[in-house]
Length: 387
Image 1: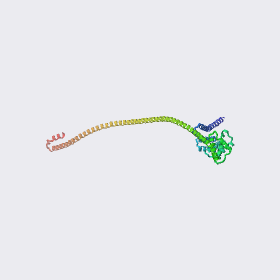
Image 2 (image 1 turned 180 degrees about the horizontal axis):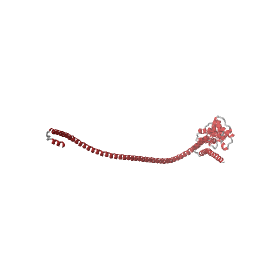
Image 3 (image 1 turned 90 degrees about the vertical axis):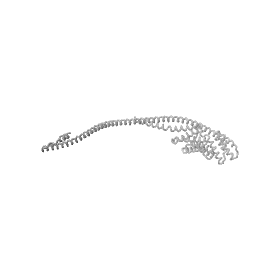
Image 4 (image 1 turned 30 degrees about the vertical axis):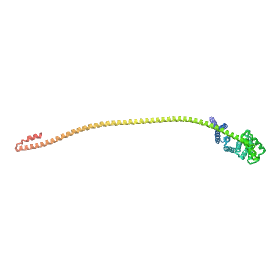
């Protein structure tokens, strides 16, 4: 039973984590696209283009959501290029949307792209493409039911493209289409009105040579150009003010960042200097301790040497005393030897005198035997010997 509950809890947790991981993907795309639309409606075109491009790039990681948001982001970006009068960029974006829609069978996306391309082709005076795009949009609207809001002005675009194609190839415009074209010359949309007046002027010049709509066309064209220029100027002013505000904000952030960076740098520098000073102080203390230890060792060695020197001096003194004693003894010995030598010499002399005395004694004894009187000098000789 416990194993069952553990398994159920693990599966539930896995499903919750999976849903939590997948849920933000779609909401992130939706949030990015809604932010782009909001900026576009507010006239912040540069930021709107950035968010449209961000949405389109994120769609490559979520293929399922790309069917919903990619073509919408590209159409929004194409609208901005058209407002900025970059018709080539707008045409490239809408053509990419059309090809994407054909590949994935998205009728609504293809319909919107064809209608946008119809107006761009009319403005670029490529009337054959304009007619082809208008017919394709008309076919899709017949095949796929759409709301009136989506199909609004579609018939007007078809009439304009058909009339332009007939004028370009010098064909007669049917009366019904001509009446519809004249009706469009009074349309509330200044763009459609200008295109219709332009086509009417061209058709009249080619046919009867009249110029009844030319002056009206020039006025409408001038007003439309002024309106577009004013719109573009207002958008540029808004972008300029926004950029200035962003620049000021960035400058303020940079100042704060610089102040914080300098503060942090100062703290780091102070800490580094303190650490260096502390390290140097410790190193100096270690050096002083080492020097003191070396001096203590030197003092100890010197003391030992002094003790040994004192011992050596005492030994030397003892040796000197011994040497002095030996010298005294040697001197005494020399004196004794000298005295002994003198005595030896004296003894030799005494021995010689004794021998002489013995000789004289022998002579006296011999003379006594012979009846002679001893020599009177004998006493003198004897005295001399003992002396």
